[in-house]
Length: 228
Image (cartoon, rainbow, N blue to C red; front, side, top):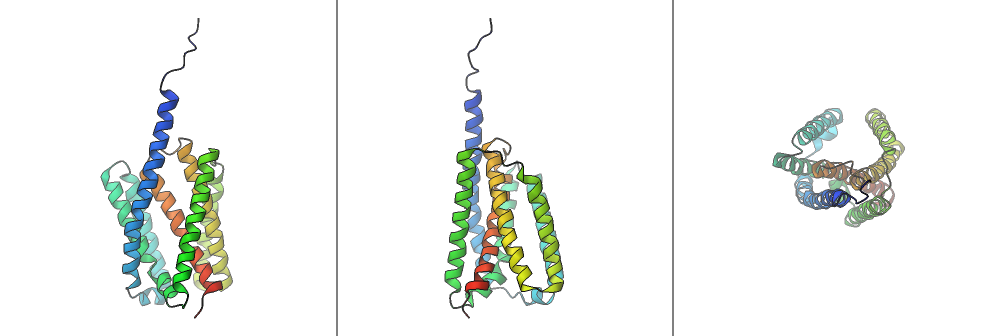
């Protein structure tokens, strides 16, 4: 006769592993905010006039550093070096917020707008992460659409470097927020369902989504609610 006794610890081990990845991801995500804030403060004190004069070169350098750092993090995701590279990358991205934060803080209500953008980003992340965690739904079907969306947005960004259309900039920001929100659902759902087992890679994905939501939400708020 067949033994119907379940294999002890199998499902429990899988759930424990998933919970550990999720817990480590959130802990690492919190840790990345430290170099990001430090980088942002340093970035606010830098002179970005060269970037304003040569936006194509600046965009090319930014993309080269981003691709290089993400490749290095991926290659070292299972070692302490991956964590150090991740923290260095978040410091770099924090510094790259310099021009946006400089512009915001020159507005009379700039501090309020930054606070609103931070609060809005937190609410979006907690809401979407909560949905993905509690429902345990597989959001893998979003992957292909999100990648296509990112490609289209980057094409629009490059086009707007030539066109300088304010309405297109706002549209890009709004779409970027939607895509980044989709990536939060996708990544947290992937962790909950056991598809992502490396917390360094999970943190990288979630950090980029949070970063994009904050920066683009702040841009929108500045366009509609900024007081000179």
